[in-house]
Image (cartoon, rainbow, N blue to C red; front, side, top):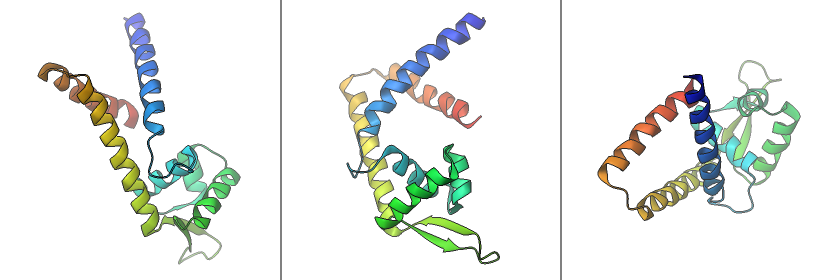
Length: 143
């Protein structure tokens, strides 16, 4: 049974790695790094965060995230907002321009993935399997 889990994990890792690599190339702005897009996506999904909270979420150091945020701030995609209760604490939030960029990137990636699936000419059963797999993968990702 363990061998089944190990083989499944290996197959999934490889397939997801290849798919993720293809989708990462699809973005609304070519000059933006994966780290910058990930930070924007995290802010969109979870709302304003401190730099340390954002760094923890993205699993990078606070100085690395600070540099990422500075670059995004220069592009007008995020803004730093002082905490109302503790003026030493600063939160980072998306600007309207940042929100639009994240939405455009998501839309382009969804369209690209839909086209990849469409090109396979899958039957109804295979499409149902993909939907079911997506639900299971979401559970794994959120655990």
